[in-house]
Image 1: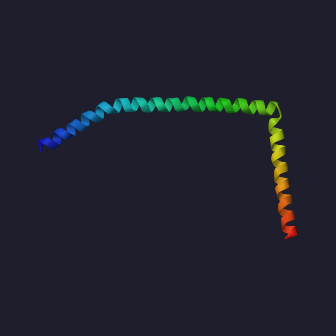
Image 2: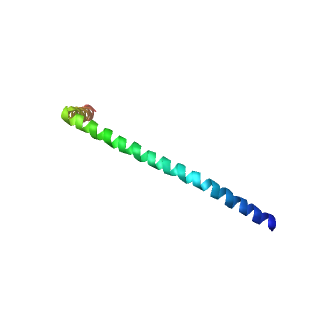
Image 3: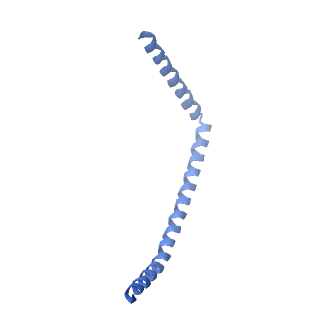
Length: 82
């Protein structure tokens, strides 16, 4: 019985010793992720601002609509031919 209690004490001490560095690293990782997300949001905002200013977004939307129309016409032609 004495041996199991000493093993429990060892696990308790080890968990106490390892808990502090683990919590530190966890906080550092979470903080770093927040910085990355913030930088990513700033990058997205600046890209969107540039796209709106240069009418790039309008060109992309127009091209996508044109692709959709072409796909629809091709499908109609295939069903009409078949």
